[in-house]
Length: 138
Image 1 (cartoon, rainbow, N blue to C red):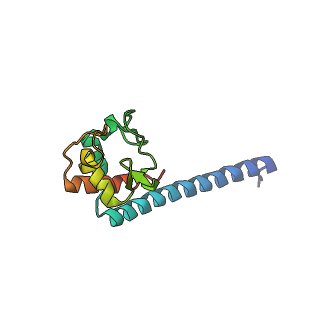
Image 2: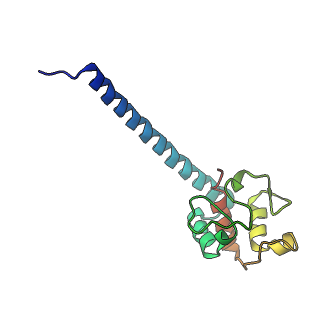
Image 3: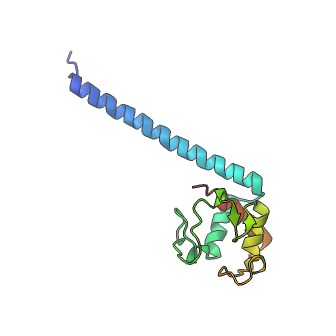
């Protein structure tokens, strides 16, 4: 019966421990993402998955950048990464779901002359987009 050398044993053990740690990190990431989506849906009453689709459909990424969202590479408006934990939206509104929806639906009324255009976003679309944006804590 042949035994592994000490070096080979510790190399294999290191590889196994690395893989276990990697699986743990991936699992935690997925769990955190799911918790954010559930929390966001409860807090806003919207659907974060549909909100991402609406974010793309309305062309928000033309002006705003947002990591992990295709077409969201704009440089006109502020980047939206971390929007869920910001204190203010729209320049002066407290960051609440209601205010976020209000800002998305009627930015010119909230801040006349703002560069953000009125895209005629409906109530349900704004609620879902808010839910999506509230998943973006980082």
